[in-house]
Amino acid sequence: METVGFIGLGNMGGGMSANIQRAGYPMVVYDLREEAAKPLLEGGASLANSPAEVASRCDITLTSLPGPREVESVSTGPEGVLEGMKPGGIFIDLSTSRPTLIRQIEPRFRQKGCHVLDAPVSGGKSGAASGNLAVMVGGDREIFDRVKPILDSFGDKVFYAGSIGAGSVAKLVHNMIGHGVRQAIAEGLTLGVKAGVEAEALWECIRRGSLGRMSGLHEGIARTVFQGEFDPPSFALELSRKDIGLATDLGREFNVPMPVANLVEQIAIQGINRGWGGRDSSVTFLLQEEQAGVEVRATGVDPVKAGRFISTHPEV
Image 1: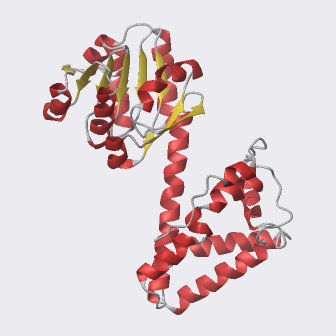
Image 2: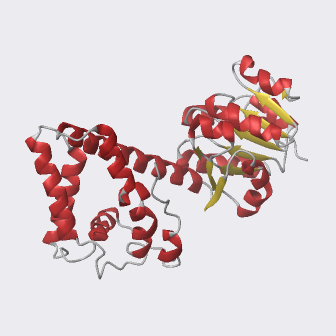
């Protein structure tokens, strides 16, 4: 069984490393705070004095660090992972970092005969502790297949995203969408409560509707955007614009700031001015694609199968 090194034993790293140890892997660990390593040492892990020492004693070295600056320093700086890693070794960065950075780092490891994967995770501290993390992996597919049992020890949704950096891109997109949706939810809930609906009742209504089941993400995008097909509409853009307009009108009536909703309304108006009012409301993706200079297509995705991912209505 491979010896696994783990650097960064904080909120996320502490839980992930504990799950690796529970899976039976011998471990060498390092953290700036030696006390963070105590639970792992009590379980039989060894403590190293530097990232370089971790890498020199391990077949596979993982890092879970706060951000790009720390990733660069720990991986390629003095007494870093690269300095200690032996040919054939594997470096896996679990941090949320810049895709450009891991793509710059990887050739330096490759020149030494080593391999690099970027594998940022999603699921928070509780997911790290319970082993319920999504792990988005970029790098060589053969290396991914080799280390997947280790990733499976702390992630219940391990997914290969593509070449080096793809995992980091996917994680940043995931987080960006999440933060944007959260702002839209904040606008909606404050509007609803100020307009006279009890917070819990409003929340229940929203999570029991199509938004709560995220049908647009799972089935809608697969059926329209991925196929490049926006006719016939499931819900027409002109109706979407009407609904958004009614909500922004209500926001003005109750003096609720709604920057995201107002922006969405303006985008819908742009689409209608293109003559798309009778097409599916997701046709506004074409405006974003046009401005970004890229098409988002995945014609191999079956919308019916994608729709099966949708969760059921909550019972209570």
